[in-house]
Image (cartoon, rainbow over all chains, first blue to last red; front, side):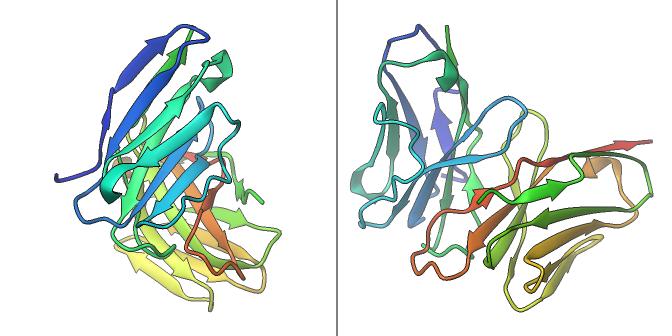
Length: 115
Length: 113
């Protein structure tokens, strides 16, 4: 596609439920990143996929968070047993090269609200 | 490890200049600058590598002082379209893997006509 797309754009869920957030990176981009942005805050790194290598999960806040990237393209971020503090905008970004000096293109984000 | 941005917020009149700073306590390999408008995704501005380079695009430029582990973003003759929150992202020196960028908490820039 022309840019990074994410779905859903908004998700409201009840505390304790599981949610899945989807990211479609730009076609051909090797690297994919997930960030979380709480209201009025900066970008918090969650996880990074580089091609077929094992992902860098060092930013995941707890074991309730997991992510996978199938076929080197689409990625899904799963949050199990959601808590109210999980409420945030979840941003996905991709870059053509798996180097830190390559531009990251961000998707529009998924706004998650946990009631 | 999160870089510190200053100021946290700034209000300018159209045509005025601004400087946004990004400082780290660790040796840096690269600094990234992004701008995010309200309700939108962050948009890339520029990347600077260690070596003290300076980059610019139209009236927005940036410098990277490796010794001070600091980068500054310069906005000259600001336009209304410059309004938004500016984030710097830093990568630590010495990390071999192409990995995560740690972002600062942002500087909110408001331009008044």
